Structures are given as C-alpha cells and as structure tokens.
Image 1 (cartoon, rainbow, N blue to C red):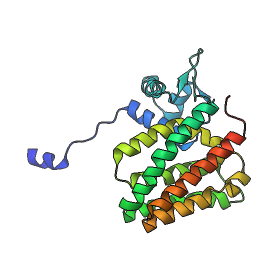
Image 2: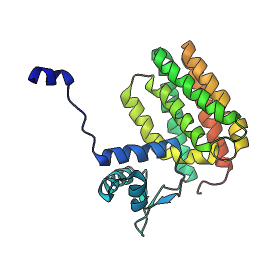
Image 3: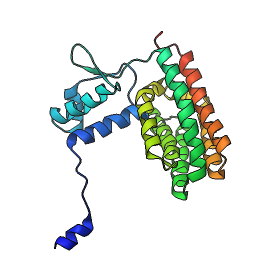
Length: 230
C-alpha cells in the first residue's frame, strides 16, 4: 500500500480562498470587470457559492497588490486608471510582452500553436458576428495573448505579465467593449493574425512587431475615448 500511494505523488491542496482569488484574477485580467466597477463581498460570496471568509482572503490579496481597492463604505472597487498610469503600464507592456512574443517564436511547440489558433479563431468569430458577445471577445483576446506568453516556456516572465494584466485588463473594456463596430474594425483581428503567423514561422522580429502594433493600437484608442483620469 505505501508504495502504491507513493506512485500517486503529492496532491495539490487548494483552499477556497485560493480558488476565489484565481477566479477574480481571471475576471480582472480578461477585462470582464471595468474600472470603477463596484462589488460587495457578500454578492461575490453568494455568486460563487462560498462563505465570506474565502472572499475576504482573496480580496485582501488583490487589494494588497493594488488590483482592487476598498472604499470607505467597505465596498470593493476596480481601481480607476489615470492617463499617466496607463501610459506607464503601456510602456512596460511594450517592452516585456514584445520580448515574450519574440521568445515564443523561438520556443513554441505544436500544442502552443494549436492553442493560439483556437483563441484567434474565437476572437475572429466574435468580431465577424452580427451580434458579437463582448465578454467572449475580451476573454478570447486574453487567452490568445497568454497562449503566446506561455509558449516562451518562461514561467517567471508569464508571472510578470500576469501582474501587468491585473492592472491593465479592466481598461480593455474601453476598447474591445466600446462597440460592435470597434470590435470589427479596430485592427485587433489583423494584429492577431500577424502575431500567430509570425510565431508559427519562427520570425521573432515580426512577432514582436505584431504584438507591439496590437498594444499600441488599443492604447491609442483607449486614450482617445477620454475615459482615463487626468
């Protein structure tokens, strides 16, 4: 019996707090929560079917890294974004994520390419739909980007990018959820096509350029909306 159990290996222990934290992080990174959006701890607990304690634990961690903030009435809010902060995050993203795209083109596996194509097609399907589903579009956008970043085989790099997306993800609401027309004509589908093609071809320079064009195109539009704080 001991030898049989040893073959199983160590089981991962995931607490409810960690699961709630993962779910909230994913919503923030995917752009499914918008800047300024408020939520109560009780509503989060009821929606996820858990007690208040794991929600408090998860929210406390996200508040500590400035991904959420607590208001005076104890409600929780997605932080608002200033223009200066947005430009700072965009500058860092161009350097870090551009590097990741270049690295992915050198180390990607066939399974990575399959994931990229799947999420590219999911985004394109929403962009071309007469009645696009914005939440599905922003999630497909996030999953495509992270399929590229995970293809680097560099977990530390992916972790750094996740930290950036926790802060920038909600602001993507101002771009991908602006309007169905923006989703169709904003240029993201072409940038995605070029990115996946470059990674597939092993062309690091072209992959970096496509990724940079994607980030800069979205950033320019977001600034033009006037929804960032001065």
